[in-house]
Image: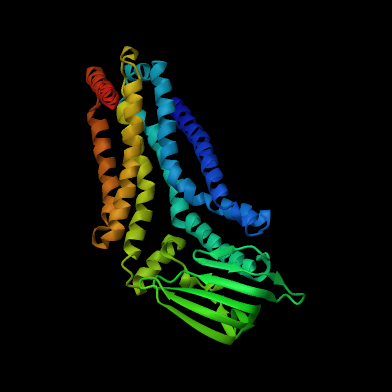
Length: 383
């Protein structure tokens, strides 16, 4: 059994890697398309574009890895069931608890991988993305803004220039700043230039106007100026460690912050990070409950496979729900760890006792029949 257990362990991991790479490739394409405007609209080099998209992958991998494990387990267990391998293993005297060990070992390996992502790699990559985006924004303002084109530097901040002078000055500068929840600002000037003023990056505008419009009442205020400095440091100031968000800090940094900072969001973030490696174990046991017991092939595998995928996926979806609730109510943030631990314990106890949840085919047939009748009734009513 030891050699066969090693075979099941390696086969599960191979399937997991294959499914993970497929899902990660699909997710990478979506991330790449979202940021493609860095090349087409903001004039960034392809290396910057690829760097940003690749740095976003650790977060994507942390999300899709638990679901990839569910699919891998279903593939391996369903294949064993179809070949009557589980029946043969059970007939040889191997208990379900011992049979589950290779899959639990694979789940532990995936848990270590997810823990590495959640505790260190994911926040480090997010921090690098944040720093690169600040550099990209500053570069857009200083060099990339194209004459005659409206360029969105940040959410709610748009620049437009008529042309560039030989000394790099921006001619007929137009800025719309809609980031404030109360006011919208519109700046226009005949000339502007990017300069460092007392260590801060500024656009010094000459001979122009500022319009401030209240968003609630629509009241306008106009001011004419001879010289005005628009602060760009807010776009590039995120270089110090103190300005990073909670999601951009490693688990060790979060524990250090908890000693000196009373931010209520720190504890939910810590609990959610700790909970992430627990879910692969709970999902593995959930899938094993439906596919790890010997059954007759005459019953068919469609229903057990469907239930295994649904229940295994719902375990992780429950984690996302608990995560959202804990962030809104920090006093119950411990539930982020308790919930998957409790599920894992219940599933493990069921496997040890030998409880095999089986949905009867007659119940499934009745449910499908009712759904068909309901759909037929709606179609008839629509006619």
